[in-house]
Amino acid sequence: MATDVQRVGVRRISGLKSECLSFSEVLGQSIGGIAPSATPALVIPLVFATAGNGTWLAYLFATFAILLVGANLNQFTKRSASPGSLYSFVAKGLGPGVGVIAGWALVLAYILTAGAVLCGFVNYANVLLDYGHIKISPLILAVVGSLSAWLISYKDIKLSTKVMLTLELISLALIIFLGIWVFIKHGNFINHAQLTLQGVSFTSIRIGLVLAFFSFTCFESSATLGDEARNPLKSIPKSVTTSILLVGGIFVVLSLAEVMGFVGSKVTLDKAAAPLALLATRTGIGFFGPIISVGALISFWACILGCTNAGARVLFQMGRHGVFHSSVGKAHGDNQTPHIAISIVTIITFVVPAILIARGGGLFDIYGWIGTIATFGFLLNYLLIAIAAPIYLKREKELTRGGIVLAVITVLTLLIPIVGSVYPLPAMPYGAFPFVFAGWLVIGIVWFLIKRAKTDLVSDINEELDAVESHFKEVRVREGGEYI
Image 1 (cartoon, rainbow, N blue to C red):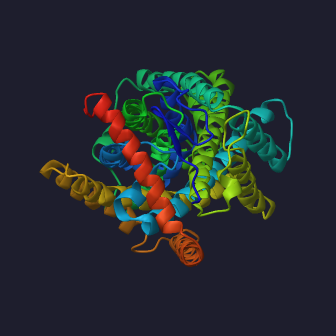
Image 2: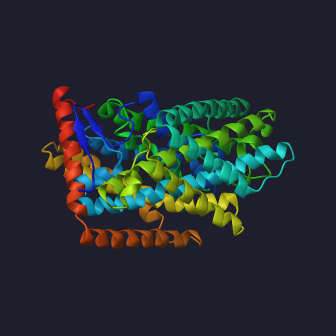
Image 3: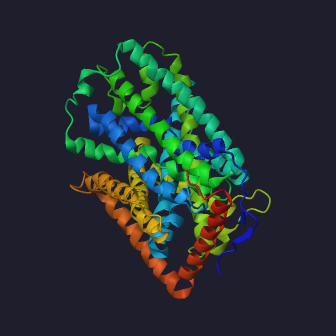
């Protein structure tokens, strides 16, 4: 058998540090992965480029849709926990074959998200260095960003989650202050152009939605801490819902503030290299610009760390199942972290944007390019989770009419950004990205078929999933059998 799952009392031993994370630390993984401070610094301007005065509406819709996804995801997280996260849950609901493809897409999504925000890190590092008239190669800055995240992730998951949550809270406080200041200076909460969606069309909202969804990706990353969270059946679903509600509200409010703050500016929101610093200058607190840029920098770095943690744990679990080489599924003897998987994720995280930077790509462009491909990976997993949830519940004899309605509404809602991102095809290079992602899936399918033919992959995955499920059924019985 490819796995080494053992059960001792209520603990499952995978080599990771068992039951070491509190709820706040589990929440720190989701918050750090989302990196809410990075969205107003870079993503809201990109959404504005297409959605214009409808930017806030794109975020409101995305928040609603992600809440639906979270509710479906929590049908699993309330009943089971695993480092494999969405990969394991999809496999449980739809079978190992579909699960492997979900994991294949999810690993790509986490790695490309880390690569995208690495570009954001480099951009804001350059913004800060410009204050001192210092020039450093973007590639060197990329090495610093990725290597420092690797070191923390390699060393200790508890340290990682604490660092992410602390840095994000500091950065968010700075950006929220700026947003409030914009409203105070303008004397209102929403201007007429945004309220009436002036100049906004369905097409502009449709394209902006993909990047708006990208702002929320990694909200589910706390689910990768299934072996490391204390009381995972409560702390993980709670962190999923809390992170969505918290950051969704912040995104809607800050999108209103940013669009309002750039009204009448010679430089439009989507063309500003450091939109938050420029916004501070436009509202009479220019001294706040460098401070807010520091906040954005640490938020991007926290996101690199969060994606590294999450992507490595999915890769680690797939390695333990035999999808990848067994060495990928090994944990560090002292640190109890998936050190080999972390190193693989870090290397690819650096290499992809580094190649594009070396070929002359702009940091904002690269962020949009690989971020869009990453979003396809997340959207596919979110769609599969919504489909898998009622099938899983029916198998467990716990399916209700509400669960069916929830799944149907979620699927229909997700089809809006999914279909809208491919039909009609956007202008190049974005028009090529759906085909790039489809090609990646084809490779994954071929890989799965080869592994299935040569190994006992399917039976190994099923055996491990059943063992985990059995363990948590015992836990639920011991705790009264109640769900959150």
